[in-house]
Length: 524
Image 1 (cartoon, rainbow, N blue to C red):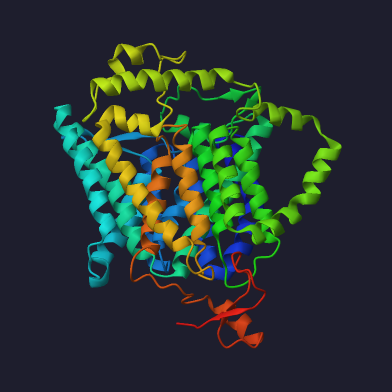
Image 2: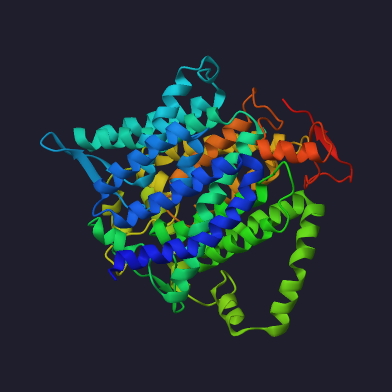
C-alpha cells in the first residue's frame, strides 16, 4: 500500500472515535445536522489532504468544500476554526505566473480565510449593525497599520505586498469576522465548540504518532515539495508529536487551546461523562507533543479555574481522584519518565533552557541598538549569529522578543496594549454575573495561558492564527450589543426541554453558581 494511503487509513481509523465523542458534546449546542456537516467536511478535507498531489490541487478541492459550506452551513465562520488544523500548516509560495512569481506564502489557514472568512466578511459589511466602529478596532488598526508601514523598509514591492496580504488574512479578517459574527452566548459557545471539534481528532492522531514514532502527515509535506529542517524531533527518546502543526510546540499549543475551550464550554443540557472523555483525549494529545510550554499553559488554566471557581474545581478533582490515586499506587515506569520531562523539575533537555536564557540576554543588546522601530536584518547582528543552532538556524523562541527585534518597542507596545485591553475588560466581565451562559473566567484563563505560552515560542505554524482568532472572539463578548442569553437552541434540545416540562430553557450546571437552585433563562 502506498505511504499516503496507509497514512490516510490510520487518520480515518484513529479520528473516528474522537469525532464520535465530539458529536456527543456538539449536538446539544449546534444540533445533529450541523455537526454532521462539521464532521463530514473535516473527513472530506482530510481525504483531500492525502490524495492531492500538490498544494494547489488541495487548494482547488478545498475551495469546492468551502462553496459547499457556504451553501449548507448555518454559520460558515465556525467551520474556519474546525478546518484550520486539518492539513499541514506549511508555507507555499504563491503568485501570478509571469507577473508576480511570489505574492504571498499560502497555507491552509490563509486559504480558508480567503474561501470562508472573506465571503462572510463581505456579508457582514452589508449589515449596518456590524459596521459600527468599536474601541478595540482602533488598536487592531494601529498595530496592522504600523507593521504595514514598516514593510516599506524592505525596498521590494513584492515584499510589501506580502506583508499587506499577510496582515489582512492573518489579523484583520479573523478579528473582524469573529468580533462581529458572535452576537450571543450561544454563538460564543459554538466558537469554543469549534475549537474542541477541530482539535479532538488531531489529539488522537498525536497519540498515534508518539506511540509509533511516526509523523503521519509528513508524506503530505513531501508531496507538497516542502523541505523540513527537522522532520523528526525527539526529546528524551520520545518522538514529539506534531500532526498538522509541523512544530511540536505548535501542536501542544493547539491541544492546550482545545482543552481550555472544552473547560470553558457551557451547554443548554449537561454533557455528563462525555466532557471527561473528550478532556482525556485532548490531554493525551497535549502530552504527546512533549512540549513543556503548553503543559505549563494548561496547568495555568486549571489553576486559574481552581482559584476562581473553587466549587466546580472541587467536583472535578473528586472525579479525577481515583485515577490519580491508582497512578501513584501502581507507579508505572512511564511516571518517572514524565517527571523527568517536567520543566524546572526534570533533567531532560536542559540545553533548551540554556539557549532561551542566552537568547534573551543577546536579544536585549540588539533591542538597545534598534529600540523604537527594530530592524529587518536583526539576525545578522553578531549577538544573533552566535545563537545559530546545529540545524543552521536562529530560533527566536519568544514571540515578544521576536516583535521587539523586528518591529521595535513601538510594535511590541501596540501588540501588548491590544491584548492587555482585552484582558482588563474581560476581567471586569468575568467577575460580574456568575450565571452568564458564557464562562468568561475560563475564556480569560485561556487567553492568559496563550499569552504566557508565546513567551516560550515564536509565532510559528498555526499559533498566530489561533490567538488572533481567539482575541476576536473575546472582543465579541465585550461588545455592547452582545446578548448574554441562549438563542436559537437546536430543535432536538428544545424538544427535550419540552418533554421535561420546561417552557423556558433551564440551566443547572453553571460552574460558578454557589447555590443549588435552577436558573431559568427565557427563550429569545
